[in-house]
Image 1 (cartoon, helix red, strand yellow):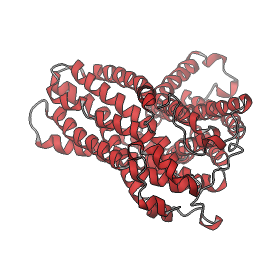
Image 2: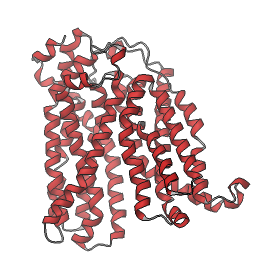
Image 3: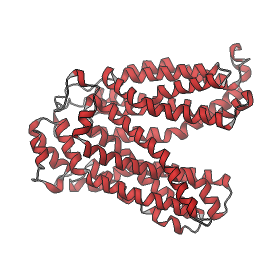
Length: 477
């Protein structure tokens, strides 16, 4: 056995990690995190200015919900895959910069609107601009980092995206407070503008600078000689169906696990604010603080857990990304088994926090899994499916819990419903990832390696089955 981390075959033929090249890669990652954070600040600002919009225009709660929900979520979901396809075809940096331009223009457009229709059109523009953000930035990571650095970069980027929502709302609130306190010192142009209009103009202003930063991100790593076995002709670059048909088992199992995790993650945040006051009689206004503390703590610990798992098993030499993800997902439903027996709100928060740790930890590994099985020419589209699948889960989960709760009786019915939904779907997610190990290894072997390396990749991802090469993988050589 060796204490050195296992590398994929082909890692040794990547260009040497010169200090300047590494510095450029980390610079590129910093720009990507800044882009995510900027997008989240824009999105959170739309929530914080909602009371001002109601005061200015008399919008109903339903109309505010349309601006915050339908305009952002639904249109972003529909636009993410086309944006991913364009990014794969014409360049990820270019489409990411174009997205920043679109959402900046949408933000500026909203600043000068006086009707609900105008604001809705602007919010749709923001949604379309942000639609390809997460798929594109994660698709750029393998272009910036070699294999041994890629997983670390993915976790850092995932952490930035996860923590960015909280940071975004904090920065948005700080901006509104600054504008309120500095109204007399602002240029004359802003003197007669409502504060929400000024805030949107300020948020749109950095767009050109951010576009220049994105275009300065280094391109694809040089010196890489690993070829793709399944690289289609240029006319087929927009076609994902042949790839999906060939690797349907891998995609079904991994995206099925992702769907199950997403269902579980949204039940807690959606239903705890209603379930805990019913079960324990606590003040509803205190649930946000307790749940926020649990989620924040879970996020920080969850981002550290993948590294701990890899470090724990490194000496055995048989850890892989999908193996670590499968182990973590298997542990995820255990805290929810105890939720129906929670005697105090603290016990309920503890169940949510522990479940959240495992959900965040496994979620941080999912971009690496999808990068492994996605050909470089359609990587953004495969990652866009991640957002679509999680969006569907977010829609299904609250409805399922509510339907079960409606047939249960008593003050703890919602707690039982959350557990009834979470435990089975999380066990199923763990089972799907466990079943995905061999199809996943075969997909990686057929997509990323030269013919003579198929045996080695299967030994890397299936260390317990060394010497046994599935006929289907061997036949693809």
